[in-house]
Length: 87
Image 1 (spheres, rainbow, N blue to C red):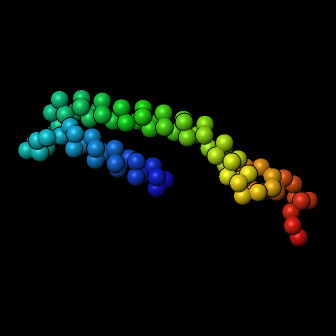
Image 2 (tube, rainbow, N blue to C red):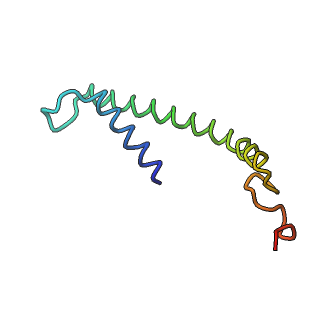
Image 3 (cartoon, helix red, strand yellow):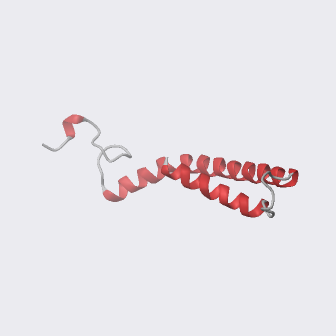
């Protein structure tokens, strides 16, 4: 949740700074509104692409980390079965 809120706040700040140039009016102009829509859409698409790549890479990274540390079992580092757990 924290990471989501950080991304959301950063996106809001970037798009606001890029698109809103006149603070003399309470409502957005049509141009500002369309700029904000396209800015947010671009950043959401980029975030989805990054998350897709991240989800694809995480299993390999966890597996490599487990192999480097010599952890038994799967990528989580947990024993493969309860019988192989140290007592």
